[in-house]
Image (cartoon, rainbow, N blue to C red; front, side, top):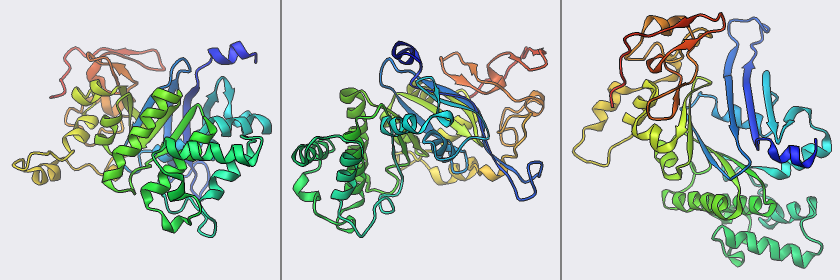
Length: 352
């Protein structure tokens, strides 16, 4: 593939990806777990973007992230980076991919080897990827990266991991990412284990990376407040499927899927007079209650607007009046694989 062809390709394209964890009984065991079920999305290369993936535990977020990082091959579907199939790359191409796509993981404690100083995480990267032609130049790069994530080099370098706070460790990982100058960061719940006072700082660094360094980011979280702070685009997952996606403001202000609406209503209010505890109990969603069926909506057992069609067919993503896409029959017609078109003459509306 020529350079011009590569540049015209999406930065990342996921097409109909499925991940099935097989039970010991074999491929046809009824206990197989479908962790990711037919997900497709793209991130364009023209400008840096920030995509937040939101979902509860068990929704398939981390499984998706591991596949995007090349850590686990999907059961079916494809993942392409600049037009190249991730799981068909040569060793040299995979080396370049590792440089262009960098992870930030959830646990700031398990990321480091406790027997080595923090410096090793950064110096190894400089040496392995030949980022500098001398030790002095490498040291300057490391100091620049630490300043970029609001850390003072003399407060960090020379220390062991246990001598740093969780927030400092996560920012060192961001400094490591900064050294690579990647095109894409995949951050899986990176602020869930750091102090609340440092979370905004971490998120602001990611926004600076996008705006000043042209680095795109896939940010994975279960926290809708965090997602809203970041802005950009949002993709809501439920039981391995994308059930809504679009502009952050559109999805948060006018959710198009009943599941998204319940997630938003479950966010605690800052009004002390609102009796949120009682309301939350009534709205509680347990993903174990959502029975999986390949030919039905994943939210059919809990949806307040359920219709017969929801039990019979799997809804595709459909455009809502507010511009986002929702996998819900409340929003129009659906053409199925058997080419049968079903029209909903009287559609209930989602309450706002």
